[in-house]
Length: 382
Image (cartoon, rainbow, N blue to C red; front, side, top):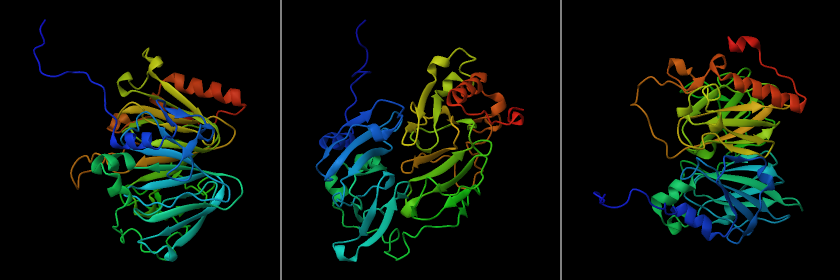
């Protein structure tokens, strides 16, 4: 039959502005997967622009939303100072050092703070920043950004890296700007704990308050550093416990900080009980240890997923949720139904009592392999 339409219905996707930038850096790009068992084991390459070793990470489900890379700061050295018009969060995987912050062209008025393994911090938007290694051994950091949509919006690296505008409402150079907050506040939207500081000195060990929304005994607080729209949380599950499976938009990434575990994820159209419904082959699983990373919804919005602490130690994770862009639902003033609400009540969470029986069985088998105990209370399944 002769074609009765104009153009083509299939084509090769061109590279985005951010993907072109990644290729220009001539670094390894680790992509096409839901996660990695330990990003500290990834192959790095020479990053001429930054004067360091590095590699990009592009997990499934994160394309166009979050940019990620690991960067190795040479022993007793520093990376090239830069500023840019996208938000950037650093987590220190290994090492100890300082970061210098300044605005404008006056580097003599720089502010300096210290970091160590486990530190979480963010240079304020479009401020000059220089990361310095204080030891003779290399330091390894994970950088997470909202660069992909910003590159796509402006399509000009000159505008992104050489913009003179100073966001004085985000950074005023005050002496206590990078002083850690020891007290938590409450998010005015839902009343859950939030850290309003601009640095978390030790995300691996900072005390987390009891929350319980995501799982039995679940602890967490949210963060958004340096006035960013980009936000996230730190969460912890007791040994032998796991989260309720839930669904949300694509993009969020989890980094394992402590313990060992795994995440399972599957498309929403496979239903809430994929194994029981003969669709178990659609479920993906990513195991991890400290330094491991996973994309929670690697296919698209609405993928169900759950996180499992399969070791004798608590499972602690650092979540990078992103910020701009996000689709805004509803109109101002309407009641908001959080994703942790039972799916039967209009939320996006599968209660333990309604989950696929294979989930519990798989978890118990993994715990047995690790010599750890199953610690879920029976009443959670009622």
